[in-house]
Image 1 (cartoon, rainbow over the protein chains, first blue to last red):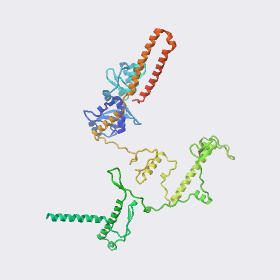
Image 2: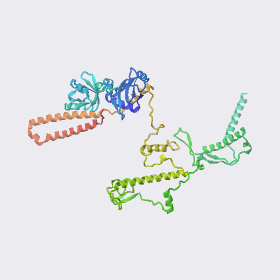
Image 3: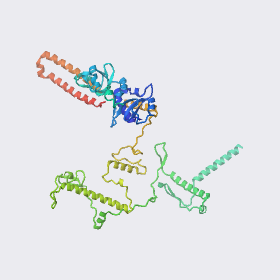
Image 4: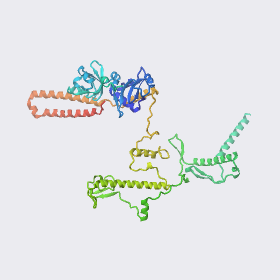
Length: 180
Length: 361
């Protein structure tokens, strides 16, 4: 377990910034305590200082997970955000997509969101912008990347993909073994 | 009382001044020889013989006084040199030394000449002298000057030779290409063997042989070569600090541990400092991000085109209603909508490249 280096921090913040923009400051600088990022076995964890002090006393081989796992660094040092970060992305998300009840299940199974399943989308969403996907009852389901900008979404045919799937809460069941 | 004291003080001060002035000037029978480039002063005056005999504090004092006098003379000579301020107005005063004149003796004995190789002996015997060869050769096939060997050599690429004649008296079943390859391999091996033999002979004769890893062979791997380059760079008087970089060498200084271990921050270090560093990083990243002008402009353009298309459609319908088919045959409106269609086609292509610059999250 170690703190992130400059390059790693930059990669993580860039990725997070795609979804929550400048609200990362609210994650870094919290009024209710000191929270920090730590790297353990290529995974990035977000935890409070008091938890960190406790976790520091566990031997490295026995330590499985600490705090919240935001994502992991791949072999080529690219940062991949995982669904366990959703609790922190959802309240600060800048661009949101609401999905109709009929295609919620499809999204939760890992499929992309089609135009026919699109309920609402934030105005001024750019193409390839990171978005957080909600159900119509404002329950965060996951996050993804907008395949089309808001303007294009209006004109495109119903079977076209509007949001690429990146992570959804169904992964808690599907990838139970690999989530930490 | 006070007046006497003042006089005493003044006298003492004057004596001190005289003392200082006396210590700056040194009297010598023979002038010293100076080599300021080497900061060298040679004193040919005979030493006071009486004092130097036998060890003791008197001898020490005499020697010390001698050294002090000579150093004083050297320093006063140095102060006479042209000097300048290094590093701007506030920097230290630096004297510009002349070229050193005195040749310092060698530290180690000079290297012995290496024994001649077998070829060199033979050449000397036969009187064969080295003939200077031209670097380029005229290639009749390609009708231009080509290298003697190497990339694009005269005579074509030997690897792509498609014909190998069977020489007279050779076995017709033999594979000529294999034979050529085998012979080349043997030649290379023989050359290498002879080179090593020459090295061994030089080593046996006691000649200094440079370190084997620093012999470029052409068979060294990339890691070996970079290691050798690093060693060569550090083997300078300044330990590589003032060594100019090779053209394609990276500009980072070699780490002491050889680049093996990266130093990380301590786990429970200063968390407040970490937080402030991260906030600064965020600020830097935020300031460099360009405002979303591209997508805004694209959306604006799309909306404009939609409006235009709607307007043109409406116009066309109204025109058709008025004049009927005649308007369509002249193709006036079709030209206009065709131009706009082309524009529409261009713009989405532009927009896709414009916003395609963003990588997928």
